[in-house]
Image (cartoon, rainbow, N blue to C red; front, side, top):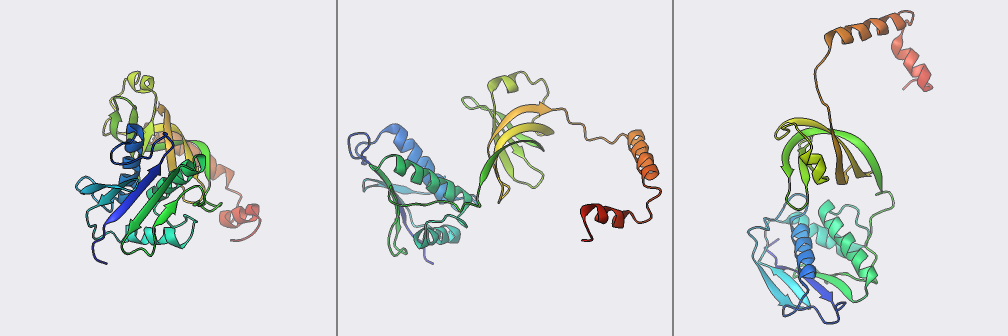
Length: 257
C-alpha cells in the first residue's frame, strides 16, 4: 500500500465552546496528543513519531500526519476497527487508546473521536453510541507478585518510577513512592534485583499493567552447596521405597498423562 495520511480528530464542546485549532484547553490538547502518539506508534513503535510531521486541521481539532509508509499493522488495525467493535486482535497500545476514548465518550455525549484515511471506506468513529470493547475473556485482575529483572532506570522528578528489563527482554515500568527510592541504600542501577509489586494482570495475555513497586527484596542468586546436598539426601531417603517415581506421581494426579 502506498503512503497514507492519517487524520485523528477530537470533537469536544464539553467546556462550553467547540474545540478548534483556535481554542482548546491545554489539558485536553496534552491528553489528545499523547493518545495520538501512542495510537500511531503502537506497542511495536511501528512509526517514529519523534520524526513525524503533522498538521493541525479544523474538524473540530484534528491532527493530520504526513504520508506514512511501511506501517502495515497500523493500516490493518484501522480496518479492524471498521469491521466490528470487539477489540481483540488489535495492537495492545491502540486498544488502550480506543478503550480510553470509548470510556470518555460515554461520560459526555459532547465528546467524540474520528480517525480517517483515504484507504478507509469511511472514518472510524468513537462516540457515545459506539461500543468498542474487549472480549469478556480479556480480563484484568489485581495481583501482587515478585518479579526479577535488571534496573534500567530509576528516579523521576514528578513521578518516581523504575524501568525493569525482564528476563524475556521486555521492559516493565513500575511507579512507586518517593520514600521507597530515597530510603533505599543499595546502588541498583544496571543490576539484577528482585521486586515486590502490585499490578493488573491479564489472565488471557499474561500482560502486566499499572505496576506499582512496593519494595525491593533481598536477592542473592547463589546456591548453598551444603543445603542442596542435605535436601538431596532427604529426597533420596523419602523416595527410596518408590519403584517408579513417575508412575507414582501420575497416580497421585489421578491417572497417566
